[in-house]
Length: 183
Image 1 (tube, rainbow, N blue to C red):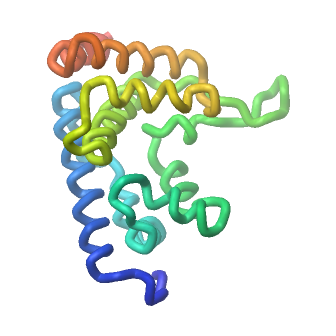
Image 2: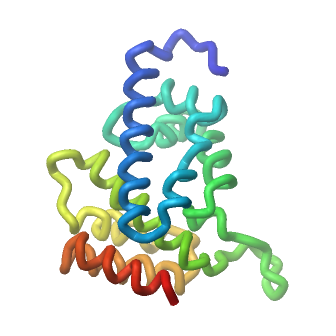
């Protein structure tokens, strides 16, 4: 546990409320996508001491607390803990290539791509608040697209889902996701 005086009680409550609200939105999205069980297990590591206390310390309300930890130390231990335990993050899906002997992105299984989509939509709603539109998750993805180590197949599937969301809305996109999940 972090014992720094800089953790204000209000930040503990605000951080708890933010991650819980986010998690509940992801659960709802996962239900709509046909992967409720995954949604119920989504981001439970955020309540672990390793992630929770850092999140409370660097809580800002408009971006991930991991960015605040990166600002302070140049990296985020909480993020490294989180991405190593949550398969809906493309960063989890890296391994050393037999050919290149370097860390390379691996294709993600569809059920985790779907959870990642549900997560991105929920995160956009949490951080964008009243400025959210169905284009926000796509814009966020495209702004950072060329700076990520994500498998091209995974990136294409996610981007196609985000484009569908932006152009056709949630109802049609979640209906489509349920149909591809069955395959």
